[in-house]
Image 1 (cartoon, rainbow, N blue to C red):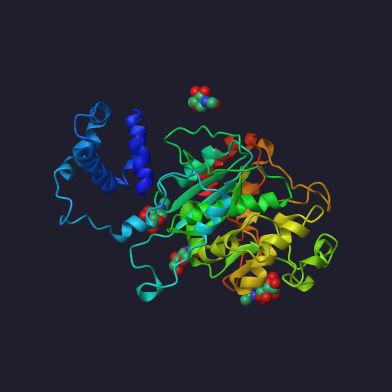
Image 2 (tube, rainbow, N blue to C red):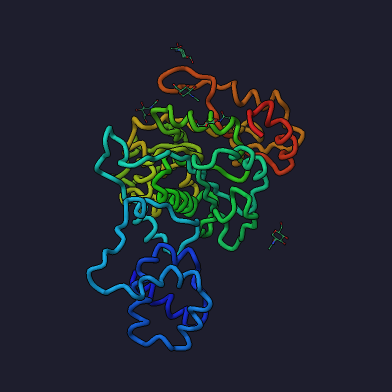
Length: 395
Ligand SMILES: *[C@@H]1O[C@H](CO)[C@@H](O)[C@H](O)[C@H]1NC(C)=O
Ligand SMILES: *[C@@H]1O[C@H](CO)[C@@H](O)[C@H](O)[C@H]1NC(C)=O
Ligand SMILES: *[C@@H]1O[C@H](CO)[C@@H](O)[C@H](O)[C@H]1NC(C)=O
Ligand SMILES: *[C@@H]1O[C@H](CO)[C@@H](O)[C@H](O)[C@H]1NC(C)=O
Ligand SMILES: *[C@@H]1O[C@H](CO)[C@@H](O)[C@H](O)[C@H]1NC(C)=O
């Protein structure tokens, strides 16, 4: 902390204004070091004069400290709020190893009645795993509208892509530090863990849902929120497939951490609660096995989280996903699911996905099985925006 303040003082001498966001949390320290510095080197130094002139606001705040005695004056005590404040923006300079370590912290003591010792409105973290642009963003904007404080957004893209959302967008500055992702490889799981870890830094995030640039929401925000809140389980698809594309991808070298009968398969698009998210970013048992032994034709994103969570938390999983997809086009062995465009978007089509399912929800039969659907082409946006208010319940 001290080193950082000195650093920004160095910056100040070179007349580079420190970023306001960095100054604020360190305000107490800044007052202190400003006081020392001025006393130490004398008030007339031109560089300091320049600094004072350029930063009259910060100096006004710091001024009383200049004349405060060095001992005896009570420093402002920091309340819990300072420790639980989420990062102001999604970008940071942490390496993956540092990030995962930090994100794997979890509270052990429980506040009164099992909760937190402060008012916490649980949020849904929407984690967008995308190549670059989000062509369906306008639909999501409407979905999120008027629900501030109950969701957070994180976007992982190819590393060189720079998102260009304006400051009135919910996606503005929500891009996290990203790395290359190859389809079906462990780098895909790395990106998922990176998204989870970034989202875990906000202690209010309680549910974590992975979506892509071709995903759409099928219900309004409140229904989606309550579906997660009311559920006793997380929605991770996990099945034991005896065939070539299931157990056939198991590698004996994964034992004893993963035995054949523990091997699971499922679509990548998951929703997990906070505890499972911590388990995923904190995993050092299964990860190395998958990294080494789940190589193509084993597709890590279809097995790693599914298998790991089934071993560690079997009864917390609904074994199904809430993201609808259509594998029927292109035959039984299709490598990619169907993509829907402008001509496919009808009220009947959307209602079929929303209401036509058959699944278990909290140990009961339910027809409401999917909250999201993929894959949708950019050309689907216009008809989706048109139908959203009447069919999807928002917009
Ligand atoms: C970003 O968006 C703005 C407005 O939409 C546009 O004028 C600008 O050219 C864009 N910049 C880049 C780098 O795409
Ligand atoms: C959604 O839920 C919030 C919080 O319970 C409530 O304030 C808001 O009015 C609800 N919105 C709709 C559209 O029902
Ligand atoms: C969640 O539970 C509340 C209270 O029991 C109920 O009113 C609401 O309809 C439920 N929502 C969903 C989506 O299950
Ligand atoms: C999910 O699958 C596991 C076996 O992998 C099973 O023990 C568990 O009961 C299943 N959960 C549900 C909700 O069906
Ligand atoms: C749930 O649906 C299954 C068929 O999918 C049926 O066999 C079972 O009896 C139903 N259970 C209840 C409680 O309705």
